[in-house]
Length: 281
Ligand code: SF4
Image 1: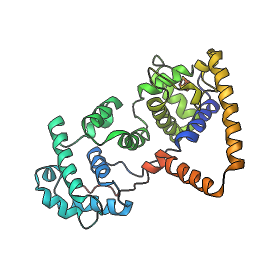
Image 2 (image 1 turned 90 degrees about the vertical axis):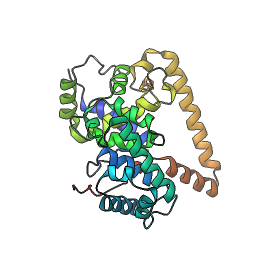
Image 3 (image 1 turned 45 degrees about the vertical axis):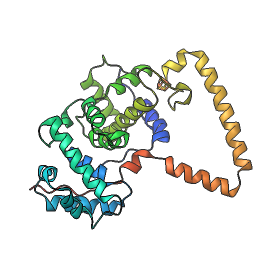
Image 4 (image 1 turned 90 degrees about the horizontal axis):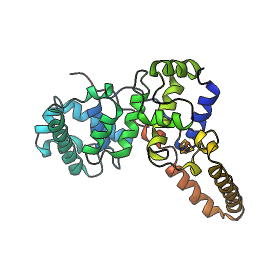
């Protein structure tokens, strides 16, 4: 019997409270372009990043031309649009294109869309500065595609929840999810489980006591000590919350609000970018 919409939506809602709601990217940007945009973005406004990116596309024939261009030329193209660390950014772009060229013998990474996600993780490890933020952007692009491969963390968490595992038939599983919750929500499920599997429900360690899925997770249900600890922790948390609410001054409340806004919704924050599609030359 398939997994019902109710269960899947419960998982999505619980994880969205922690990680935010994934935003569907308007267009699919080539992987190399995503990497370049990532390095242009530090301390810049969205509109300026877009202008700088478009200017690069207009002034150079392709990424390989930028790779072999003089740093000064790249800097001149970026200068009118960017406010911060322009020479460092020009340097980084040239550097990163060279690294990609050394690793793949070409500056085109589109074949990675079809590969297992571990290939992208490997790339992110090989290019300093890409890190988690880039991966997060990338998985939103990847998982909003219907045929994207399922990550190993997807099966790991499914197994811990006792809902599906690596022996499940992938085609049947996907069909079941799409029928129950539709393509868009299925993409949310893949993205949220991926983030959860990379940050909290890891392969060798898991923080069940602070997990938004603890109430429906079979691993917690099987271990009464975890349930007890969890209940105790929740009682303590609610006592602390109500106390804070009563004694919090206006200033403290504003500070907390700022902190929450700063930390909340990593997916939304990372997906604000709406870069126009690269023109085919
Ligand atoms: S309760 Fe523990 S095992 Fe279950 S999903 Fe959460 S972190 Fe993973």
